[in-house]
Length: 179
Image (tube, rainbow, N blue to C red):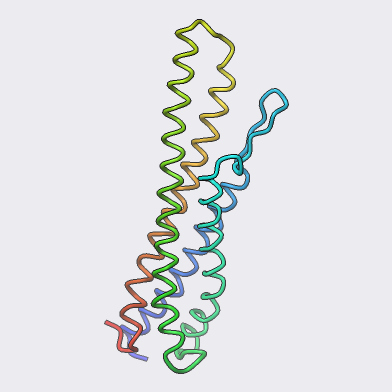
């Protein structure tokens, strides 16, 4: 295998591992995102946008788990596990679909978190202007909850970036000639 081809194949394997790691971390962050206030528990699943972030991250994990053995085999053995055009085409189209799915999850996660933070801030300011007190704990816990949604979206952004790089490499690698 030529040196540039080997670099591309090894880069693909490393990027697949990084994508899997980032998406798995985003899943862990979003699933554990909850808080309790006066006996009522607020979970990530109470916000539909966070459910979508979970779906995108889980899709990235699943796709990466499917692709990783093929990428590792190609990196180690210096040949494809299955000959023909199926795997290169699957890489080419699959990476693009998952990249767009991850990108939309990032957008939803940031959008929902930032807009809800603004809304909660305005709501608390309005209650304060009316003389209502005792909402500090609610404000603090809600802000931390939404900050964690932003962090999970940021980690998912890292997964998208690595998948976007993969789309470039698999596009070049599709015809077997590389760069």
